[in-house]
Image (cartoon, rainbow, N blue to C red; front, side, top):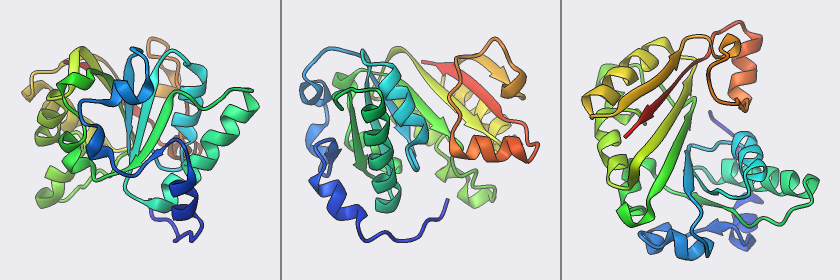
Length: 218
């Protein structure tokens, strides 16, 4: 998703207590940052923060790291998180957001971090053959995730793109993940997780596009 430059985003992020500008410094030390032993879950490509802001506020016993590469997106996510926690009358104590290139994510996380779950929501499908290695579910990315995922950890994927979804099933299987659940119509699926809609998801649903989803475990 393209978004206009927001001059206020960078100053607000730098002033925020839950924004991390130097994530490489915390590789293997994220539990120390959170100051507890609660599980750590990730959202890769958090966008405007509609998903992670709800997820984190509903689950105070889980720590969250939300990653995106665009300051404007992270600025909007920051504000959304603040709004959600304010409405819940809670302090922001179980989430950090950071700006980083997800293709290099193994530079900021390690096996010591014991990540328990990854959420990938409506990532760029990169449909052209030469660009498919950029997919967040591509085999080369999954191999990086395996370096910091805990045993039995899960990856949750949601997408509107049929080709990305079908290819991702193959990517997961080729990387040794076990496909636990799949659906080609999440809206009418009752055996999946309690779903939190993203901005993209609402848009696609209004257009009559079915949402595909899967859960894969390490």
